[in-house]
View 1 (cartoon, rainbow, N blue to C red):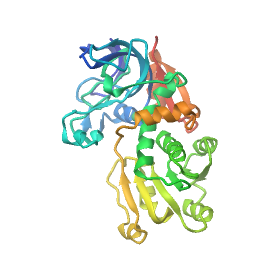
View 2 (view 1 turned 120 degrees about the horizontal axis):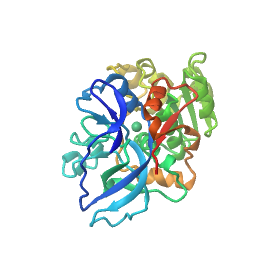
View 3 (view 1 turned 135 degrees about the horizontal axis):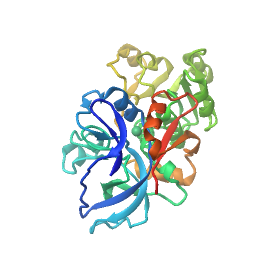
View 4 (view 1 turned 60 degrees about the vertical axis):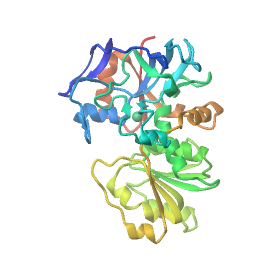
Length: 345
Ligand code: ZN
């Protein structure tokens, strides 16, 4: 099949690749419709690795996907040919201890699309377990369906934060993950979000998404803004979605006594934080890695209108322009949030 393939020497091309996929009794075959370009895809394209994951064999990119069911395994009950769906890109070992404990995102044996050596889905079809395939409500487009994957990260972070109605949250970083975290936190009960970034166009967009106050850290002090707008108390929750060492070092300054910090962004290098600053506020610190059991809730929030992802879908490319799309994404302008690739149907 024709796929967007990244070679170990980081050459990227649309080329034929043989991927043998047999349909098991509990699988579905899906014609891929839309695939989002994620920071991790671009990172593999630019550097050939993320931490311990190294591209050593040709690998198809892409893991944020939606499509249409074209074949159904004989034991599948909840999906039919023609159903529009989105898919969880990580398939855990169902019998592993983390999976049995309900933390299947932490299963070391998880096979995650476009994480070496597992192929991604910038290709016409994929076979996937029906249990990790979700029907899209009629009012959710394929483009929104492909955004459920990043939204799931924000939803998982919002759950970890144990939001109480009326909480004020800070989100550091206004990229895709920062934006969806802000939307998930508002949907989860936050009254207000203060979002910080260095790029004004991203902040301008964020400000249109709800009760969200933008802070440009190149010319504003986020601690001052947070303290002014909370009567000197601080934010109930700080979501760190930038991965920046400098931002991480300052999270407790923004926080109220007894508040919660959730680390979402993945720093390229190990970073440090001030334990005493956390202790004097008895901060609760959480970390998230991907998500588990979130897709149905994410779809329900989009379908109900509580979360609107459409303003984040800024750019679209045709499948035949995939290489161009990645070259563009490697130097994405700050006016863009999420770029997606649409496959021919
Ligand atoms: Zn992603």
